Length: 399
Image (cartoon, rainbow, N blue to C red; front, side):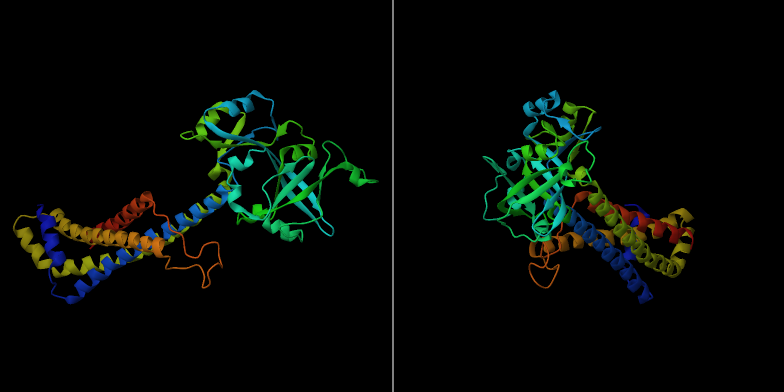
């Protein structure tokens, strides 16, 4: 064994002349352990919220969304759409038409986002898991057209899950100016019957604005026969986004679920990074205890250092002894803190000890969500070692 490491281990576990040095060393190790534990738990909570939000969007957003780079619509008679329909990488291919419209009830007018979908939409999405009501999930039957709206939008319109009078839906005619003498003539108009269902994504951008309808209804309303604003895809097993991109080429944007909600997840990543940065500052303060502990130890062991010099040790080797002791303390604190952090995360996952509110059902989930990612654990461990070893180096070199 390296004699520097051997002596450092003896100094670490031996009883010091001044009991305060033992206490300060213990405090330094505990401070590093607690900060490491906090880093592991905090990053795991952010991962949990990110996974929770992604799960909410999963029920409404497609696995893959194909949209044109230029223009707003895709011609459904184009070779690209036919290739997607027959591709072995595609399990379900659903054209959609999504535009702004105006919904009018007896006493209210509300702008909405109308999304017309093909008949296979239920097979492509997970919408059936977030439908509420006693109705049947159909969007058209014979001559009738049905709508399924977000639960918050139903409240904005003053409606319940079911309603007797059909919704009056308006959209401006393509390429026409508004006729001031008869404004209504400048709009396409149609009706949507109640399906007896509403959906609840737990995201206001969907629950408060969207209505699902059939694709032919939306194409008529928006003067876009044979067109779609996007193609939504459920991938076949083993297929990837890149496979779809290679089929459609550079004229189309291909986005997975995270890219479709890029702004939301970017904000969550920024919040996670800021929390990580703040805890790193606390870690730096915790490592300052190491400076005091090593300084006092070097004062106490001054006579030992003189003896080692007399035996032939140089200054670099003597500094290496205290370097190794400081690193052992940092390693112990990082290792114990990481284990404690993982243990606390597991307890939270299994038992949900830290709750979101006092009463059950107050939030979407009752307890803080946790997702442990090995890369985050590795990043925390390396960060603690980096900050800790730097503080040890500075303390030994500048004493």
